[in-house]
Image (cartoon, rainbow, N blue to C red; front, side, top):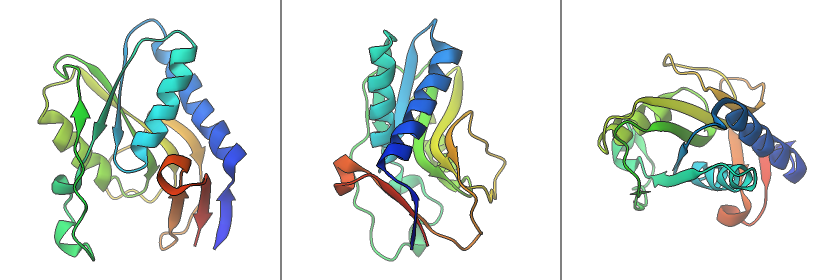
Length: 171
């Protein structure tokens, strides 16, 4: 296992995400929806940075456990957590936030879940790390850090509120 990003590099990547979103959306409302787990923590950090810049941010959290297409292949039953989206999704310009994009399947699941809440005007994707190797035609609009990986590599993201520390390791 090797350290790919340390705490300061994660902070830089989150700041980059917030700056990219601010440049594109600073004149309007920002509707962030973090994908559990860890995408929600990334989204919280982005929300806080945008709020510091005076941007009005709606914030929600989405649990996609029951929308996954690999549900039957999970080693253990997923721990279901609640979704919490307290703003109308109809006609919103939603920015989904996740920690890592790999094949694109998590994003597909999140899109299915978000459309159960309503019909947004648009959906964009913000990710802390883009590691490549898509299986679906999904690309993030906002990327904190591109990480070169091999297909069989594992990217392990640990974040302070969830795991007690900020680190990204590559195995």
